[in-house]
Structures are given as structure tokens and as C-alpha cells.
Amino acid sequence: MISITKQNETYNISETAENGWVMNGTASYNTDGTCNVSFTVNKSGGLTEDVGNCSYYKPIDGMVSVNYNVAETNRDEFVTYVDTVIDAVLAKFAE
Image (cartoon, rainbow, N blue to C red; front, side, top):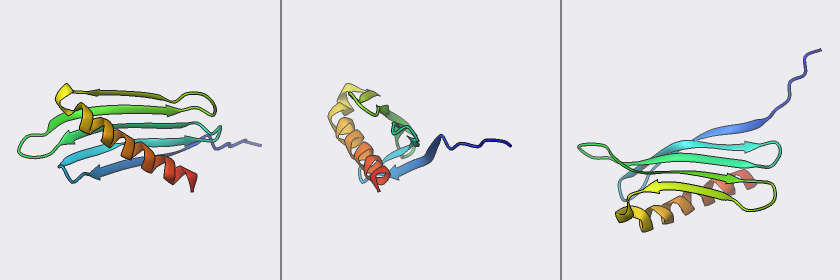
């Protein structure tokens, strides 16, 4: 008999923020309890402008890993936004 075992749940995530930033990415919750979130952010308008990108990994135990790339001029606002995205994903997975 064929064994079929669920390994993870993967979701597309997206949002257009009030400041005009457009976020698109994926969020995965793995059966072992780990979590991965990866997304890019662009500014919409006449020409699409890259704002930054982020990847987040939450292991079962231990420290999380967060990596982002953003221009220094957008860093403070981007880091605040990263936190809102990660918090929303973790809240969804906690349901």
C-alpha cells in the first residue's frame, strides 16, 4: 500500500498596505512545528519600485532566524512592517 504523509501546509500571503507597499510571498507550517515565511515588498505606482524582501524561520525550539534586505532609507518602516506580517502569520497558524 502507498503511504501518503502530510509534510506541511503552504499558503500564499499578500497585502497592499496603507502606505502603498504591495507584499507577496508564502508562509509554510510544517508538521514538525517549524514555520517559514518569505515575502517581497514593492511600492506600486507609475513604476514598480523594490522596497525589500524578508525571510523568517521559526524552529521548534531555539532562536528564530530573520533576514531582510532593504535600503537604509526604508529600514525603520520596513522592519516595523516585517513584524506585522510575521505576527499575522503566526496568529493564523496558532488557530
